[in-house]
Length: 129
Image (cartoon, rainbow, N blue to C red):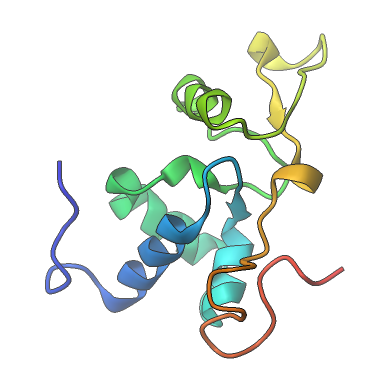
């Protein structure tokens, strides 16, 4: 399934998907990072866009802040992460299915090199403490 044309896609969704396409292989941004980058919306809005329209972009690079892999898509995402060399943390013995988590400290991308700042001219995503 191809990506919808700009005319068919809500403007905010188009902007979210454009950010997802900027994220380099082997790196991730959280839903909140994407919203911060855009200067609009929040993690839930970004998650909704990704759930509805994210299939044609590297969806596995927009993630939960705790590094947990997307429920129901863990194995597909894990294949992408391993192929791209995304930093992972090995799963503990008590982790369901022994699925690793993302190493957010090492995998998180702050947007450096994209355009230097968020769309609102503010700081890059992930630069806050």
